[in-house]
Each structure stands twice: as structure tokens, then as C-alpha cells.
Amino acid sequence: MERVTGIGGFFFKAENPAELSEWYEKHFGINRVPKTYEEESWQQEAGPTVFDAFDDSNEFFGRFNKPWIINFRVNDLDAMVAQLKNAGIKIEVDPETYPNGRFAFLADPEGNPIQLWEAAGIDGDK
Image (cartoon, rainbow, N blue to C red; front, side):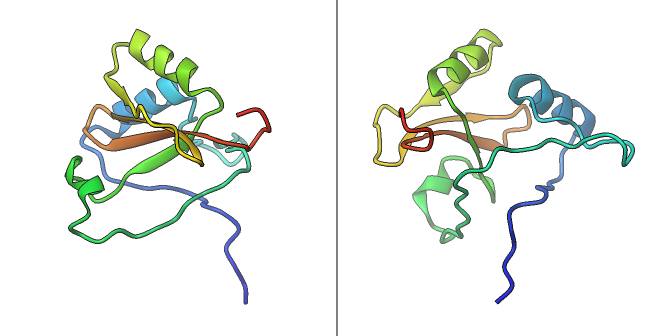
């Protein structure tokens, strides 16, 4: 069976696409979509990716009232949280450490939910 090799893009509607793209670039280092084929797009590091559908009534989604949540892997959750807080962004760190790592939650300026994940065991020292 032929399989996909990864996620090649994540597309969503926004009230202010240019401003939102700038926010993601400024706070997460995600390059904007290149204007030409000569420019390079954002490159993600190899690592685990969870792709899962949730039931409509799932409580996890209920707190966000949105149809999707993007999860970004980070190397150092504490450093990323400090960086975002210093930028005035509200972020909530899950106090529990799970077998697969640590998590934090925030929303972008349009209220889209973001989960940050410091995965356990990827680089051998977490």
C-alpha cells in the first residue's frame, strides 16, 4: 500500500490572513508561504506526528469551540512558554507530565487553539 510521508500543508480560513501569518512567523518561526518557487518554505524537523479524529462531543475540544487544534513539537517547553509570556501571550502549561511528554495550550489572535508538546524521549534527554 502506498502511504503518505508527512503533512505537506495545513490550510485554514482567517479573518486577517496576513496578520495571522505574521504572528505565526514572529512567535513560532514558521515562515510565510513563499511568493516564488525559488524561496524556501518552512521546514519542520522529523519526529512523531499524531493524526486523529475526535468525537464531536469530546470534552478536549469543547473548551476551544473550534473544529481543529494544531499541535507543535518544541524542544524546550519552558523556554517557549517564557518567550510567549514575554510577548504578552496568554499560555497555560498542563501541570502533569505524561509518559509522552509535557504540554501547554494557547490560542492565536483569532482564537484558534494551539497545543505545544515537548515530547519525551525524542532526543534522549527528556
